[in-house]
Amino acid sequence: DALQEMYNQKGVFPGEQFKPARRPWTLLNFLSWATVLLSPLFSFVLGVFASGSPLLILTFLGFVGA
Image (cartoon, rainbow, N blue to C red; front, side, top):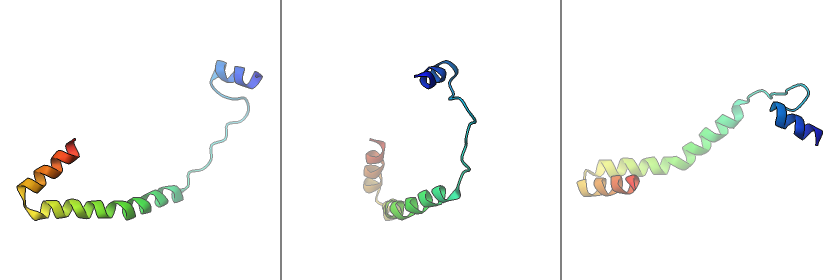
């Protein structure tokens, strides 16, 4: 209870603050999964715009806008 009360008053816990070093592996993991999972979506979007069909492009833009 004393630790909670001190945190409520000062906004920090007592003692030395520990801040772990940032590691690049988390960012690398996120970027690799984003690339793997979003590449089919980008391929689809390129296919829609490459088709040249105004109806298909407007339908796609309306769907994305909604």
